[in-house]
Image (cartoon, rainbow, N blue to C red; front, top):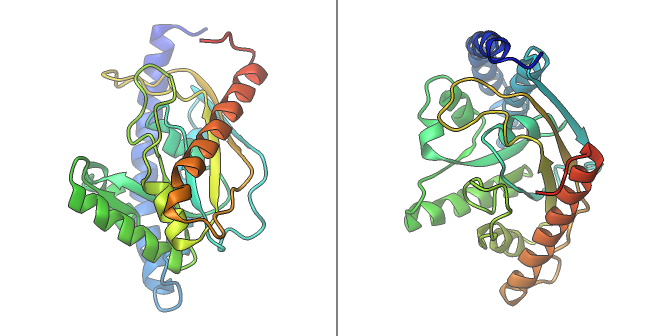
Length: 254
């Protein structure tokens, strides 16, 4: 029964599990980073371990059921600029179920959270201060360095999550980065996370969600003049992918 009491009890349990997992994972990620630093400049191993915390948490959270679909490219160390629509903060937890490692461009406030933020820094995630053009330029430069280290970069091109559920317009940064680095764009379609963590409510919501890997889009030979077309093409792919997921979930439109 999806009662308020059950949601409250399960939420308390899930937050406790998350706290314990973070306490266990932090020294593991730190040790992994220390041991692999001489030969793993991109912190791939530390980051991969960090993301798996989300898998353990979801398996022990009765309110959530996450799944992945589609096929990742055979060699994710190629690398890629990965982009996805943004329904909820929980998108990060869902996408982290994919069996690969990507460096996340994240608002600076999250990297300031004790333990979680420390693990993000150990994993070489990329801080961004919203509304600060200098920070945005620095984040794109850091993203290029991660790509040069043969690790993919994950960016939400909407910037912030949609309040209405409608896909917002995509900003150009991720696509400029992909063209500048001449790496492919890998689109992801996310569906079902919107109610997993509601705004202004500490309790989790019941959610069945999925992330689908779509076909990569090459940037080979493209210039900045091609950026708007690339951006719009990828957005259209994600719109279509999300619509496919909505139909498969059997949900009414809107």
